[in-house]
Image 1 (cartoon, rainbow, N blue to C red):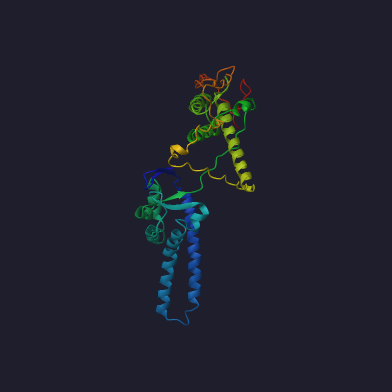
Image 2: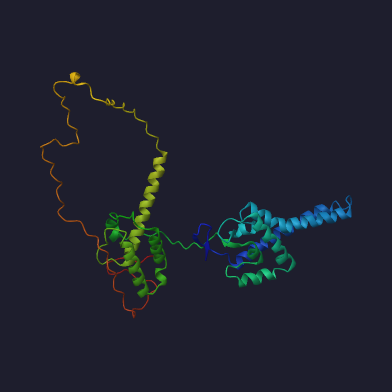
Length: 343
């Protein structure tokens, strides 16, 4: 992984392409170029009996330059940094600031590739890729580009299952303030839970659970281990997201409601009052507004108070870490509360 600073001064983390994948993409491109060059040479050779020798030599040179240099330049310019080999391996050439590759950069890479691969058999490209921190060859250094991988490793395990003991409590959670960063950290922690030692499992889980409890309410029941708390929150969040998406998909298929008839606009009040001789001897009695209290009337009684005050939502304190002498187990069983560790 490498950090790329965009033109808007935003740091973006990208996955730099490794040398084996770049070498495999290069072999595919070289194979395509050789097949194209041999096919074009066979067609030009068929015209050797009818064309001039100098003309054939000029055609051979033009075809060689077009295939060896024009192939990567044309493909990378039109496909925004991907040749056929890079497309097969999931690679892409981008600028150092993360923007798409431009024609000038593709031309620099194509001319340098002619020298690196076809003239010097790829030795300068190999040495430069091993020395460079981002795996750049000479063409990338001259053009100001970097080759990234668009196919990251997928380590997503099965979806988290709600602990049965916390299902009723999780249904009452307020999750609108939960940041995505803390949720991603908790998900990664649960994925690597079995790779951690027991002390690290508890210490890291308590720290992440404490951070999450500042944005999630109400607090968990007493005695809940950190991994069970995090699993319940993420499982409930995922269930609500699926329910919302299903509701939106169903709402989009329903017929649109008919537009009701608009109410007539109210009468506009005269800008000035009528003269005194035209006013009524007694002012008309206006009907009280349905949502306005009459003068002298008693206010409505307040709502009855709940028998128990609402909880103050304290932040749960981290649980004490287990002793360091506790032996690690590869497949720990359920805890005292019956909570099963994440799979």
